[in-house]
Image (cartoon, rainbow over all chains, first blue to last red; front, side, top):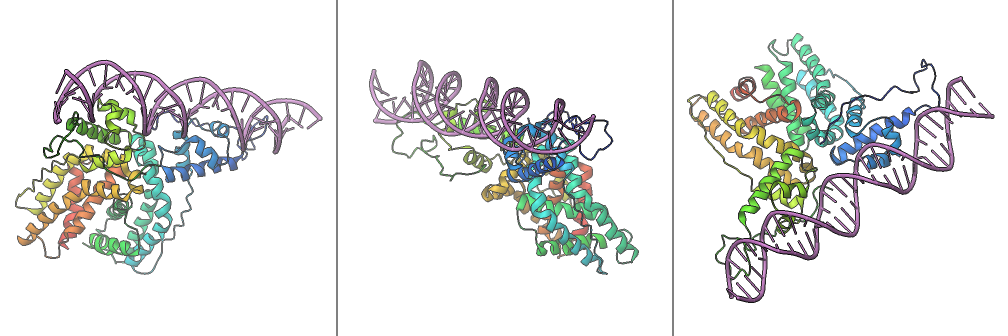
Length: 213
Length: 213
DNA sequence: TCCAGACGAAACGCAACCGTACCGTTTTTC
DNA sequence: GAAAAACGGTACGGTTGCGTTTCGTCTGGA
């Protein structure tokens, strides 16, 4: 009903960046239009949800013709999957170093939230149900939204451990799981704001005790 | 787009259980039909999501006429809100007492999951986006799905504290928040099964350390 | 210069859904 | 027995979305 067809990619047919293709008979496809459509798609999923966004509204939003859309993708599912995959991922990836693990973690979370909060959450909420029906999309979203921070968290913990600030038993995976869960819980269920007070609560009441035991 | 109108309830007009009303001119409304419609509504929200379920499919599922539906509720939003409100809440409310807080908690979570797992989660996933747009519905779902367990958790912690099994600093609210978040995270984001292994992980790796610090 | 193909815009037929209205039937009160 | 109202079923007009097609225009390679 929601996600159905087999995703047979229709890409790399006449893209501009090729230069090696033997011959492209007519006018090449405009990569800018393509990205505009994908961007608009993510906007719409975040605004009205996966189920409610229509190809007509997408065409209007992207100032594109529906023919231009269907020339590239076979339908909504394939389009959204690729939009999520090629999503803007400006991993600022700061990995702060304040000398204190507790402050590093807090700074990291604060920076993360600024990017994630309003942008990804609406997208996540709009796509939650579709995720339940498509394991690939689910995995994709999970990686896009949360898994990227996993490595960074591990780095923070490893550094603090080697500094002797955390015991060797400190479990970075557990930290990642618990912190991510708390944020998700607040975002989707309670709806309370994700602010410094909340992050301080997460760090001091949950993360630090768990790592220090 | 999703939740719109003012919920002016059209109920208690000619319900059967009254007996005090001065006169009811014609055939009274059938309470059984009403409940059948509400049950079918929750089923559909869980199956296809709030946005995708149609009044036609609801009528078919409940073996009811659309007139019968619109005679009671003005639209989808009002109907779903009341369905959630009057949802079947067979709070088994066991509150096990094994003598050990750790085992009590594990038993409580195991029992809870059996009820919640497949039933509420699909409902939650189907209604996530609508929740973001309607704070009342959000609050309602939050209470229905999670808040009921809050009191029980507090009781478990209080008992263990008075027994001297947990320190006085043990924070039942924190326990409730963290455990609920971990379960939600697994249900909506990772999609991994909620089994005994997972619950043991939650209890031993997160809950107990947090309460014992 | 020519032509294939992309482009935006608009319209198409089809299906689904909405909320209402009308049937004939059933159930209750007066 | 008559009036009133609920019931299941069906149909209606209006709206929306889908995926396709057609049109005239624009663009770049041969």
